[in-house]
Length: 230
Image (cartoon, rainbow, N blue to C red; front, side, top):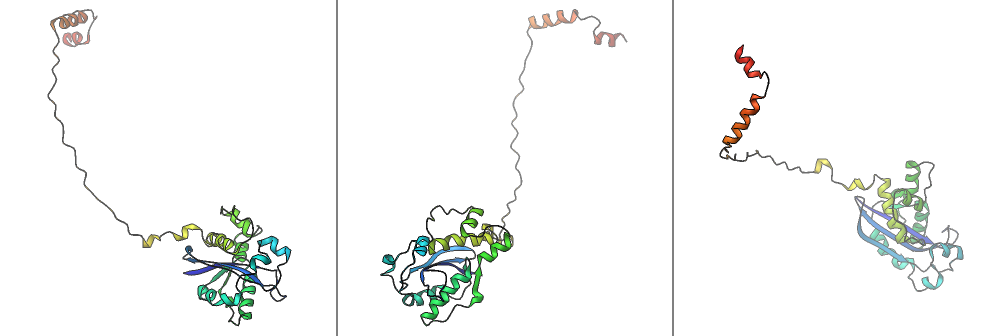
């Protein structure tokens, strides 16, 4: 099953109030395994970047000035997304900006029925715990040491690993027992040929026989004499 994990960076929290998307990162997974295919793009928001937003993702006006408009990348993005489920962390936020930009570009919105929200999944699986991406990476032992600032593609790659854990863990990719071909090998043990050695003769010398006879004579009331007399 093909799915897309994605993340966005924006100028603020509300598309309806004039904020714009400045970055999107998408990671393709098939049967919960990353395929290596990604989509990543920066966009010129056609407005100034608020300092508080820049502190989060590090994307300033100078960097975004020569980037394409979202409308110029919309077709490539739509083609990459296809019609499969779309996974995001706090997905309502990302879908709001994605559909806002699509509408502004004269494109049809993404069906909200395709949305999978990993925050909602984490709240169900770990009630009462922290559900930020950082917290979930720590819970599942996912290395995020290279995440200094928020970045759409990096966060999507981390989220894809979190999503796998939330949906059953890495074992989900293992081959099912019913699909495993077992090969059994049977064999009859073969006995090793017996090794027959010639008997070794140890004949006592006359001196040894004399010492043995002398020792026997020293034994008081030996058993063999009692049996003979009885």
